[in-house]
Length: 128
Image (cartoon, one colour):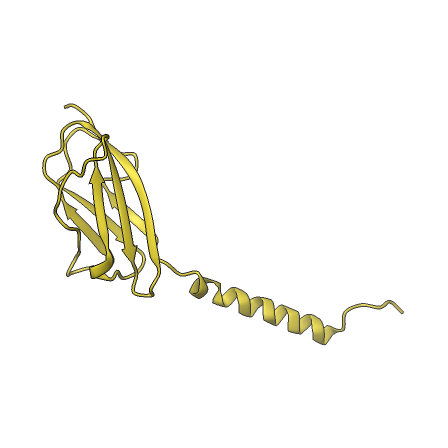
């Protein structure tokens, strides 16, 4: 007779593992960037009028910011970003006309579940 793990213990371990996997998304939930305009690494022939960031979770408007910086680290605008009144997963920032150059979009958002996400990406405005 071989000695092994009793079937009841195997069932208990399997149930515990499945339970842990079921809670995984809840334990590590945070806002994830779904889409952006301009897109990451976009090369544009015209200056964008807005930066728009769509997330997979609703955002806390008072704790969400976007900064668009030029290659020298200077802000492209002093306007504040805002969460769209029609879509609580969309963060927008109006932009003035941008001269050709490389720009960094830096954002920090707080989702309604209490998790903060901070990230950045770049886009380029080329001469027409």
